[in-house]
Length: 285
Image 1 (cartoon, rainbow, N blue to C red):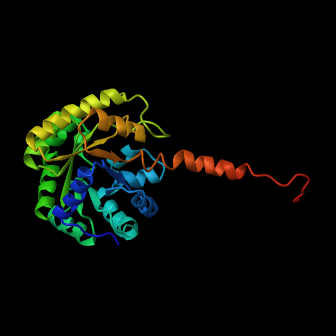
Image 2 (spheres, rainbow, N blue to C red; image 1 turned 30 degrees about the horizontal axis):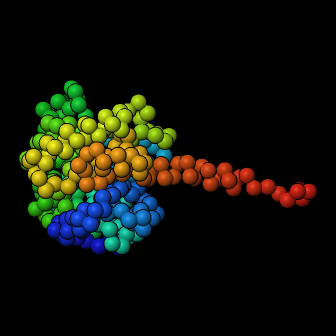
Image 3 (tube, helix red, strand yellow; image 1 turned 120 degrees about the vertical axis):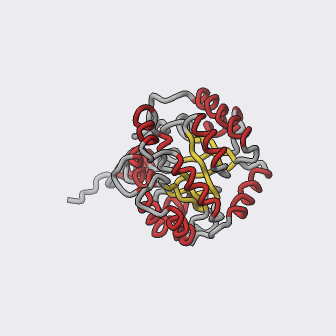
């Protein structure tokens, strides 16, 4: 069963890696076997997300943003029954929907902490929406402030906090109000594979956009840990580029670690088995 960490214990682990010049790797884990072998691969943080469930069922990550299931209940059950029992040492965090009007969020966070989650990330998030829909959410009391409040409550419960933002306005609001321990600029849907978004930005464009957000948040909270995520960050070489051309401390991986580690390798392995043949001249009929 996963070890429970206090916020400071969690931070100490992360800063110890950074100070020995080891970039951080945070990944999603959509089921137990993914969690088991991602931990063996050396991940620093494991995240349980409703998107992870949909990815592992063969659907695109954006399924997690649609009203198909109770996101928070899904993460709670996945963590309790599948991921947390398979993890030994790496800290596990919960990706939670802070705009959940059907729950007392403090009580729910206490439950999450009790079963073994050591941190909280504001995902699914209304920050992904823009335009008239986002404005309507905000004006009808279903806005980003709920997520900020959730992260603030998680901090009060001695849990590590991780904040997502998709634009500079939200990033500034997030950092000033919740001051999360980790900031992640979500650069967009990860490209590649069967459900990736191929028309996205280049790696160079992603790095430039990300760095602008990193500079903004560091001016507000200089000791914030920063992770790169999404868009053109698909392979280890892309991660190296982000480390070379931004001041991030590491990467957060979703589709690029879960989905892409399975799609082609599994297809190729099955094809290899199908390619075996009967001995020459043998008849099995």
